[in-house]
Amino acid sequence: MPVTGITKDTDTRTLTITAEFAAPQERVWKLYEDPRQLEQVWGPPEYPATFTAHELRPGTRSTYYMTSPEGEKFGGYWDITGVESPSQFTFDDGFADGEGNPNPDLPVSQNVYAFTEADGRTTAVFTSTYASAEALQQVLDMGVEEGATAAINQVDAFLAANPA
Image 1: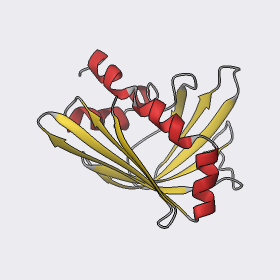
Image 2: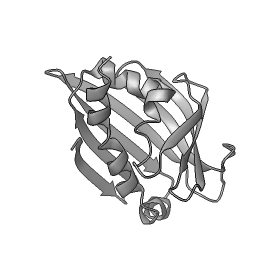
Image 3: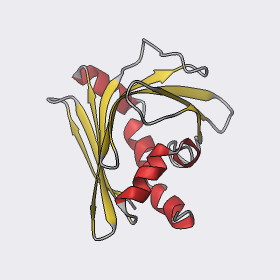
């Protein structure tokens, strides 16, 4: 399983997930850069993702939705704020409707996804910071920890089946 650690800190309002992937950093980066690859692992297996827009470039907005087993769509967006290929990207992550319009009633987090390589393996540190401890607790109550873990734990199998 790629997820090696999860830290929830209400004092700093952060959720940090650490994972290790059995692939070089450049290959992991390509997964996050390519919407067709990313949608294979972004949602938990039972909530597959579809990206309707995605470009890792500052100033762009990625939009996606996850589809429940019952066919209900849950949208989200990333406002990309920084990209340092292949080591990290930063973005604001929010909830959206099925058309990608932001939902102002749900929390937005500031995120840093950082990647480092050692011995052909990539360590990823996914850090999400919320405006308040209550906002962090709200997404934890919504199941973000379980959903993110299930999604991230799909990455190694996808990369093994798609090495290039």
